Length: 236
Image 1 (cartoon, rainbow, N blue to C red):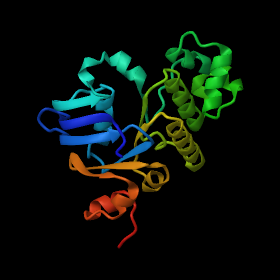
Image 2: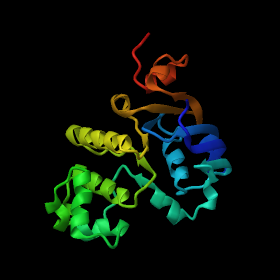
Image 3: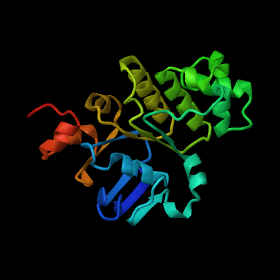
Image 4: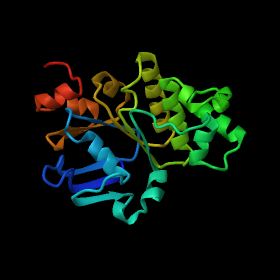
């Protein structure tokens, strides 16, 4: 039985009016596990992600989330339910606790400690200036902040691209744990090794369209060589 769709995209065109990046995208993104979005540079991966929480709107076509047109959602309300983590974690002035209170102004210190613990950070970081965190710590803090809104979906736009190997693997394990706990992730990545470590499903974009969608083993057997290369499949 197929997983129910979190997002349903139908004939979506998006990007600049005179040169759309996405052209006629139709796909259902399942609401469980990690869906990795792969594709060459400029194929529309980040554009797709930005559409899913209305950082951008399509030029044409429709996007539905849980059976409701996404344009019916007030953007702020939608972004609390469809949270997003970026390649470079956005940090606000003040302490780590101040940053967490951006998402939940009423959070207590105990609640903040629990939020940090969820992403593998020590509570003693609460009073540290957010800008003094390492790259990996800052990304985990931003994930903790996103999770405080109790999102139904987490969008991740190359969240480890600026991190070293150890920090990258920590974020990967955290993402898989979050998805396993019931918060699906749509994860844009250009790293084929990472894709193979985290993906439950794979969406491949090429030239602004959906080249392939399915489980990794299906992508490994795909007829299109570019699809196989983008998912790191072994040469036949």
